[in-house]
Length: 170
Image (cartoon, rainbow, N blue to C red; front, side, top):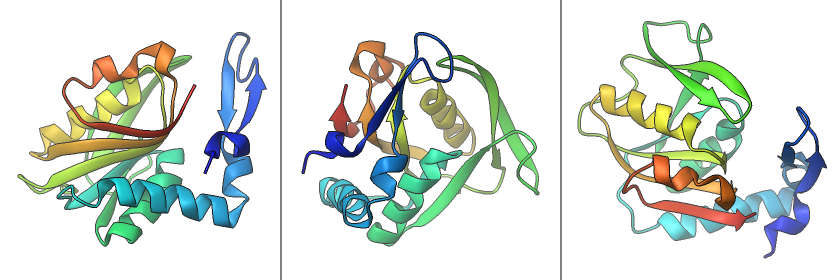
């Protein structure tokens, strides 16, 4: 299936020069959304995964249903101040700004095999920060899965030797 047909591109959002890939049009189509999750699950069927971690907020809409499809748990990585328990945090640069991510400090057990899932791999900053948080807690990154990859932004380079799956490339 050509998932790109279901992704709306909005120019100059959220600021001039940004070509925003809007997945809400894909998410509104139940059979297509389901096929995205099923395709990622098919590509990951031979990877040993204990849990999936996804950064706020669109990582939740890819990571949580993927975790259900694979029969593993889901761990939210949230913006600072959004989790109720004790957390660890890390600063990171967005494609168009700065922010801070956090995880509960008991979310990952040492040695757990963690897949990171998100809607988009752009510059790799959010995912590199997520990897940092998971590794601080002793988790082992077994890969990263995305609906979209913006290849010209070279996000894979920030992820080192981590295996990356993406269904759509711009």
